[in-house]
Amino acid sequence: MNRQEFIDTLNRLLNQLSAADRDEIIYDYQEHFRIGLEEGKSEEQIAASLGDPKVIAKQFHVDYLVKRAEEDTSVTNTFKAVLATLGLGFFNLVVVLGPFLGLAGAILGLFVASGAIIIAGIAVFGAAIFGPVLPLSFNAGYAMTFNPAAMLFLSVGLVCLGLLFLIGNVYLAKYFFIGTVQYLKFNMKIIKGA
Image (tube, rainbow, N blue to C red; front, side):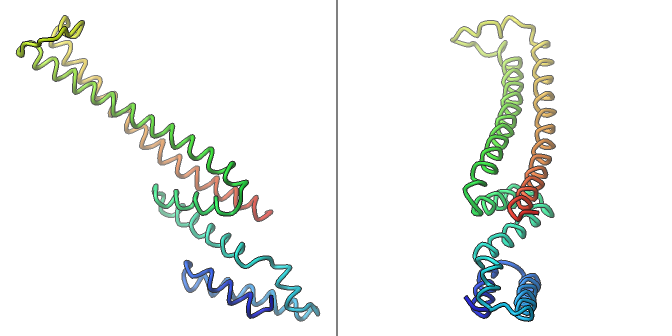
């Protein structure tokens, strides 16, 4: 692959980056070719030493997505950065996807648990209000033996506990996404050999 083919391929594959970033990257690689030619190397030798333009473009694309996820920590941006990192090799499939899915599943489970606690509080509230008034055709067990006032306090406590749990989960999820971005940056350093 000669200089023009390398630069054209790299430029075409970097189309998702901004024009300024793409121009800066292309300029850097043109400088590599200029310096290599001054040292007496052929264009093919320089292109071979720089590597495959497809791999280089993937790495820049992952860098771009990780920076975007770092600037705007959202589920979508973080997930895009994780998926782009997976495209760099099989190693990342195990090292990035496994921990990400495990921790994301645990956080989702915590959100479900907080929602269940809130719903249980609302159900206890309903049982306290409507239980003594409505005739129930089923055996409610221990629920109807409690004092309705105590059940009201229990329902308020459950709803408050669920809401506190939900607020804690929001902060946990925020730090999970920040940590994921930092982990992706660390992973990129390992891939680049820094």
